[in-house]
Image 1 (spheres, rainbow, N blue to C red):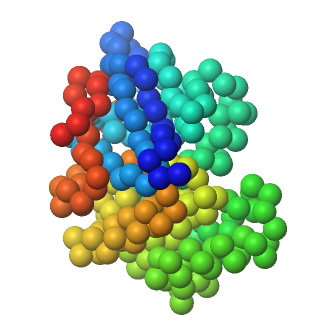
Image 2: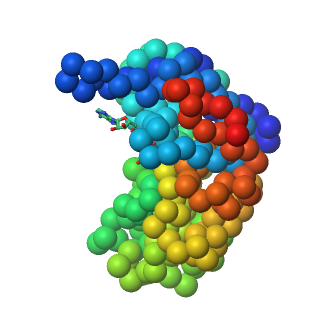
Length: 227
Ligand SMILES: Nc1ncnc2c1ncn2[C@@H]1O[C@H](COP(=O)(O)OP(=O)(O)OP(=O)(O)O)[C@@H](O)[C@H]1O
């Protein structure tokens, strides 16, 4: 499965209307991402990193072009089909953890699995494995407010991969952490990606972390170019 094509963007266009003005954010963006591969997306603020991640992860539809996940062209599918594919195949991590405050770390990781229809016992077993893998097993019963920033992000990463997606899309996942914690959280995320054969596209301003990924890309005039 390693080396298989996970995500492909072909000629993707994305524009926003701002009054009378049209902002062209993606303008014929082409990109491929393989299983087991980590790619850094490094671009200035406002260049369109979030737009790219949301379009690749089926949260937004391209105005033109095609997004293929596991070889399936998704751009013209119904909203329902896109939601199902997104739920099964895409995990998102953001700069802020967005964990549910009233649930424990364990429950936060179980939830997406329960939504998908998995039984409680199975969901809990997988959640505990992921917590162990992220080296926060002893924090399983803590609520988000009872976790450090680095621990919160490790739970958020575990939650993002709870349903064993094909692709992990991360938007500044360590942007809110001090350099040492960022490095530690990145190590854990990288190990998980390699271990599970995920494909990861990670937007970051951190050049040290970007340097550790397999490839680095940036956005230039709406196109994705290798750095
Ligand atoms: N819904 C929207 N309507 C109009 N303009 C938008 C919309 N969403 C984003 N934009 C504009 O598109 C551009 C790209 O936004 P995007 O959030 O993708 O950038 P980014 O590279 O992720 O920035 P940052 O690093 O600051 O998060 C920005 O100029 C933004 O103002």
